[in-house]
Each structure stands twice: as structure tokens, then as C-alpha cells.
Image 1 (cartoon, rainbow, N blue to C red):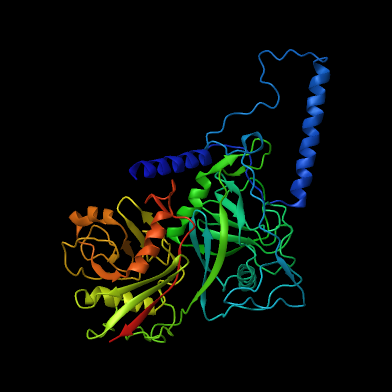
Image 2 (image 1 turned 180 degrees about the vertical axis):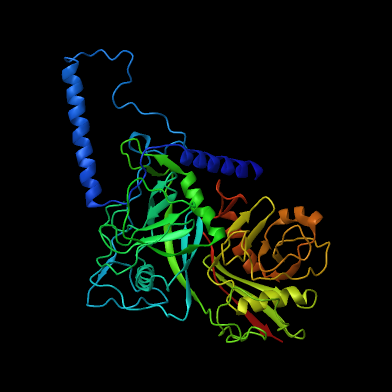
Length: 496
């Protein structure tokens, strides 16, 4: 664990050092003018070489001089297998469908009937101007959450969201990384490279007036329409002038580490002046668009209990702890609907009423919907989740903490347990499942509150998830399940 963390920190330092040096151009945002300039540069180099050959009268003597075409060794990670040691791009996802018509209809919020990658026209207005939206990039390195800015660029944000809703970006690769320029680039479903023809339409959008760390930049028109950049540093330093990029929003602080991890994987391309790509495929599995209601305080009353049937709004941030909403005379079961199967957990309201109530109320506010079980650790036998903002242990939580209910707990397979920091009374929303006997290793830290127990069938699902663990060098906690396990929803059943 500590060794992985140090390796990750060392790799990031190497990226920073590479950025600080004067290096070859890294830009990949192409324009016709740039292509013409490159062709001209090639002609000039060819003429220079011809002149040198004529000057030397065909002599083969190269003593004392470096041979033409000799390249320096990269300071970055070892190149993955590919032509000349440079990693190959993964093939683009299978071809998507086409939509025709004067206006593209809005995608079905439940998911499109089929993936669409070609459009005859721009989409209708699909986003509610009264709501806030977050784009959730599910990638093979982790989730990237971007708060979209409708006010700054409503047409571009709407168009990007519609493309995401039609699965346009599903299965696409981050095809370009630039540690010097400070960004990663993707969004090309037809070709997985910068020459993608795009979705077939353009939209009006203001160019970004400034560039800053954490921006999601998007190409709204021109040769690169539909492609996106994610900025990792305070300075955006492309190697050539760029135009037409608009800002769609801001990456959450907890998600920025995923962009940095992609840059750590960068390998220089020895055959071009335009940088390189990750040494391993970084795939955007999907981009989900989530909405929240930002209306002024009081218009959504969070002082009471949410509807028990789950019909209330999704809420991720609160002003304070939850009111008591569970009846101590009744029994409550948390039902986890996950991509790996269903898990049913009886909550211990009698012994841990504050903890059980807090979890149940958050679940009824859909706090845990569409989150990842982001950590598996067979060594201590646990699965961890409950972090909707970042899907990582650094998640800011719901905005409050709850008191610890008891101490000197012992841990056994099938329990649901609150996660927290080393500080007392610091739990808020994250949880972990105790899955195998190795959880007994936590008994000497028995301050993590146990607040429920799953049945045998559910424990079987949890055991299968833990068995799918893979070590992840870029994960400071060691690893996670592969494929990723998504918590689609957590519902609370009442009985008795």
C-alpha cells in the first residue's frame, strides 16, 4: 500500500519535471493552417538534408556527429507494446447508429434504444435551465465528475449532454496525453484519434476567455467538433495556437487525480512532434448526466423526512445531520441494487439508531444512486463505497458528520459498517461491507460502527465482488473490482 503510493507520487513528480523542461510540441488540436505549416516544415527539412548530402559529396563519414534521426531516451514510463515500442491506439468502439431530421430529439433519460454516433442536426433543448447538471465520466482509471455550466454556454452544454445521452462517447479512448501542455484529450467514437469526423453538426459557443485547472473544454465547431480536453494544471500550454474551444464546466477536486493519473501514463511518440498517449488504454466507458435542483434554501424542505417511497429529489449536500425518520418499533432493510447482483441488509435500529437512520435517510434522498463500490481489499476482507461526489475516499460527504454509537466492535462476514477517519465522530456516509474472516484484523480498531447484517444470499454476492479484486497501481487504496460494480440504487423497505 505505502509502496504503491510512493510510486504514484514519484511518477507524478516525473510528470511535473517533464512539464518544467523545454520539450517538443505536444499539441494535437489540429487546424488546416497547422497542417499546411507542418507540410512546409517537412519540405524545408528535406531541402536541408539534400543540401547537406550535396555538400558532403556523398561521403559516408559520420564520425563525431550523431546520426540523422537519432532520438533521446524518454524519461517517462516504459512504452507499451506497439509499433516501434509506442503503444497502439485501441480500435474505436463499434459503429453507432444515425439519426436524421431537422432537429435531433432529446435522448431517453432511461438510456437510448441504440447508440448513436452520427446526427443530421443539432439536438433540441434537452436541459432544464432551472436545474444544475453534472457529467460523470466513468473511465477505466476511475470517475471524473464535472459540474456543467449552462449559464456560460447553454447550447454547447446541451449538445454535449445530448451526445452523452445517446452513448456517443461510450467505449472511446483517451487518445492523447500532454504532460507539458497539461491536458488529456478524447471524444472520437469513429476513429479514436484527432481526425474523427465528429457527430455531424456544430453549435454556437463562446470561446473560453481563460484557461484554468480542472476545466472541461469542448470543441463546438470545426474539424474537431465533439472532442473534449480535461485540463490538469493552472496553465494550459498547447504547443500551437488553438481556437474554437469552449468551457463546459469544472472538474471536482476529488476527480482531478484521475486526469493526473492519465498523464502519469504518458509515453512520447518518437515519430511525431505531437506528443504521445497513455501507455495503457484509458477508456471512457460512459458519460452520465445527473441533475440536481439548485433552487434557494427553503424551496426544498430538508428539515423533515424524505418520502418513504423514495419519490423525493436526489440530494447530495445538506446543511446538517438528518432528523430521526425511522420508527424504532419497526424493521428496516436496505436493498442494494448493483450491477453484480442484489444485496439485502437488515439495519440495526435498536442498537445503532442514529447510524441506521442516517444511512436510510440518505438512501431515500438517492444519495447512493449510481455510485461505485470503489474499493476492494481481500487482505482485510472489505468492500467500500458511498462516495457520490468523487467515488473515492476523499469524497467531501453530505456536509456533516454523525456521532459514533459504541466502540470495541468485532467484525464478521456479512456486516455493513460505517467508514470514517481516525478522528472520533467523523463518519458521515461512506460504508464498507465485511466479507470474509480477514475483517477480524480490524478488531483492534473496533471503533467503526456496525449497523446492519446481510443475509446469506447477499453475502454470496459480496464474496463474488471481493473475488473480482484486481490490484490497481494508481489506486492509493490498492485496488477495486473488475469490472467496476455500480450501485444503481439503495431502497429502504419497512416492515413490522
